[in-house]
Image (cartoon, rainbow, N blue to C red):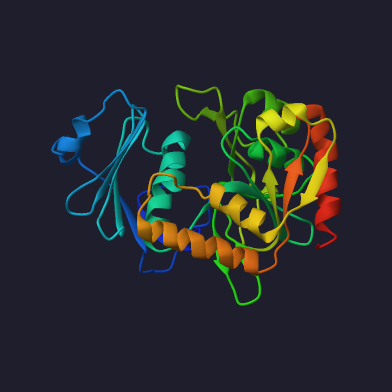
Amino acid sequence: MINNYHLYGLKIRGPIILPWPADKNKIQPDIEIIPGKIQEFRNLACRKHRPQNWFYYYKLPDGAAYLRWTNIAEFLISPDSHTIKWYSHLKKQSESFQNYLLNQVLSFSLLDRGIEPLHGVGITTKNNEAIVFLGHPGYGKSTLAASFISKGLPLLTDDLVVLKENKKYCTVYPGLPRIKLFPRVSKRFLNSEFLKNDGSLMNPETSKKIFSLKRKICYNKPCKLKAIYLLCSPEDQRKTKNILIKNISPHQSFMGLIANTFNTVIRSPERYRNEFHFCKRIVDYGIPIKALYYPRNLKKLDAVSAAILKDSQTGK
């Protein structure tokens, strides 16, 4: 069955089933996602390159891109980024497969369209405004989001943050209703009131799971961006005893955005140019961008989320 979806501002068509409202109208898709034939992938000479690598990316001579997550899935993005073909080593509709397809793989198509995604998580306030947290893997973005969800504040997006720029403000596109957490974190903050299942492993190399969330605790419409918080490193979290939210300079805000763009594989001059101008525009909007320091302790996160909500209400 072919379904049409609107995701991250793109119109997507393919034989995939997502926990997301499908568009029943006929649409001209920006991206078509189709299953590839195994022989088509076997014919790629680059497929044999670096078999020991967990992740492998290769740009083909015709401009197409080959991506592989070993023992998970392989993808082939057409030169115009209009078509994504897949070959899955797992169940075709597994959470893990969809995670790599609709986050990592999709980021390449976004970049080809001049759209610069950020690496973060977004939650929705009671005023239907978005608060975004940015940070590298392991910084605790999703864990922090889980503490907000436990208070009844809906998840907007996890991992891939895509902004729409308007004349005077930015909006954040919603992502899929799922979140990646370690089991001890989900046990601490989320229960059957919020979770649709017990989660599925992201990949064999981690104990982190992908949890599907019930629709009532996810927001599926674009939200006006209220504030951005840059998370400190785990090392700084271990040294920090108190919650600290710091105003930072425009230059520091710019560098914080640059450091937290999503895709670190594409390093072309054009990408760097687009990345630079995108981050400068976001800073120029005057959206509050602040540095966030807090102890790396699950017991402290209720106080952290309360401090963030109070700070975001100031609008400064």
